[in-house]
Image (cartoon, rainbow, N blue to C red; front, side, top):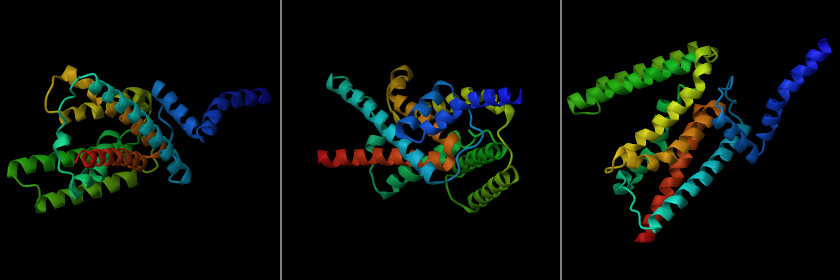
Length: 261
């Protein structure tokens, strides 16, 4: 009986082991991502920081480059047949060092923390995320009310936020993902991905919602990649992947601008 039970357990675990081995190759990692988006399942824990994690991130960034290349090619074909694309607010930016740093460094940190910092389902991460959002909302309100973005109160609020986040992460460091979160994870994953895409509608200055929705498909696809990386490799990994994504976009914009001059 024990032998039969052991054999049954090994057969049940075989697909998981096969997927784990397959993910050790680039196309294996991509297949695991496709399996994930077809049926999002929250892993018990993200991989620890290691050379293997960095390699996994590199593979997913390569997939991001391939998919973004396909979408850019489609956009190019649309322009070639005479359809005008909507004006993008980012196209009018003066790409100095501060703007580049904001897009490549600040935006990935803020957006990944805001949209996917809580996606692990662990109590410490969710509490830290709530503190992050609440502090951001308070500072934004104070800035609008006083007409200034700096001041002693802002620095005190940031210090309190950091202390609360560190405390939450330390206190709940061993707490696993909550059961209800794991059950609702597919819905929560797609909601976070959709919200990330929809926020980028603000990049466009004209056009109706129905007209603009197709133009945030790249952000929706990228968001699903960042979400996969976040739950399998950690928040630091999704921030890094996001930064690489934005960095390549900025490099393309700058190279096109130089070619046009």
